[in-house]
Image (cartoon, rainbow, N blue to C red; front, side, top):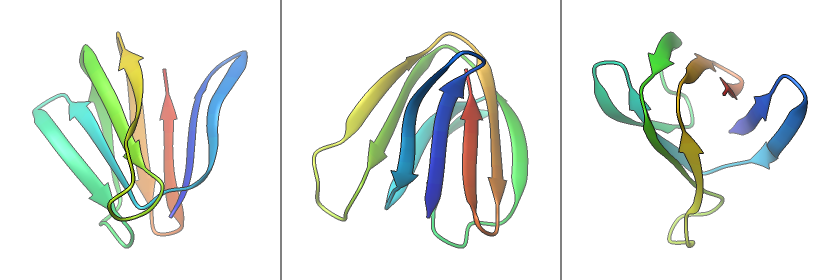
Length: 78
């Protein structure tokens, strides 16, 4: 899936991802390709993305933010 992780003035990641695990408002969630669309706020924690199945995760700290999942990918605004 296409994934973008960014702040207003900085892009942390822009590329393909196998999975994204995020600290959603109601608990931790993992997003995979073809996940149903959703929008949620993020609580403090850590984003963990895997570019390929079995790859080492890339981690990004979260203080707050928003996650939007669409049929064509996902966007995280921190």
